[in-house]
Amino acid sequence: MVDRYLGLDLGTTTLGIAINDTLGIVYGRENFKFKPGNYRAARIHLLEIIRKEQIKNVVIGLPLQLDGKEGERCASVRRFIDDIKKEEPNLNVIFFDESYSTIEAKEILIDRGLRSSKIDKIIDMASATIILKRFLESLKEAK
Image 1 (tube, rainbow, N blue to C red):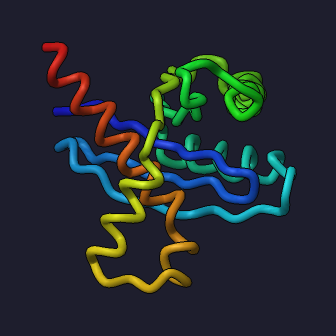
Image 2: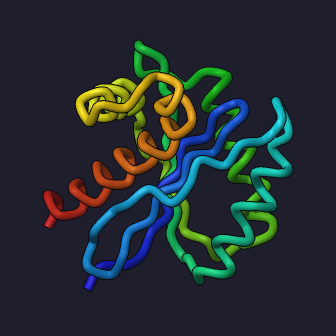
């Protein structure tokens, strides 16, 4: 039995959300859209899911720069999580390198025959799914 996790991909106007079941199967939950810079709306929505689903673990993509260093986008992700932790201090948060997850997600969606207009509506959810899958695979490899 696998612990349940939420996988997140935070953008400037969307929050991609994925979740796994107790068998370890990962699936996209939603692509939550919010107004530019209105991270508060994303936070409120995420907290509702965490509480409703009784989530104890969150894996959030960390958008490292090409040189592997953290830039302003990483600082934004960390601020978002700091605010979440103020509401849910016992939440276990794992920052996980999200490099190329969006590119991989887009390739998968194109291979499935989706049009670019549909891809744009779900890309962050698909990226969150990849981030969570990669993380869970890393746990298996560590055993």
